[in-house]
Image (cartoon, rainbow, N blue to C red; front, side, top):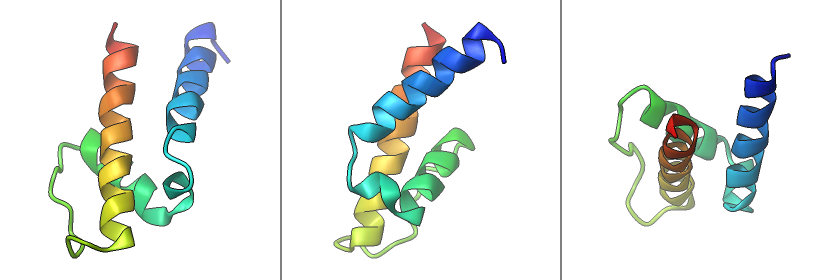
Length: 70
């Protein structure tokens, strides 16, 4: 594994940790992936745990993209 890939994994793990316990929800991963695919529409009811996890996943993806772009 290249040094860049290792660093990106460490960055991802660090950012993800900041969102405990929501990072353990499936919707967190879906929000993360959706953001990376350019989909910013949260499909869940506004005040649900699923919506919160999805939003936080999307936020984490945004932070991750900013860090690795530098």
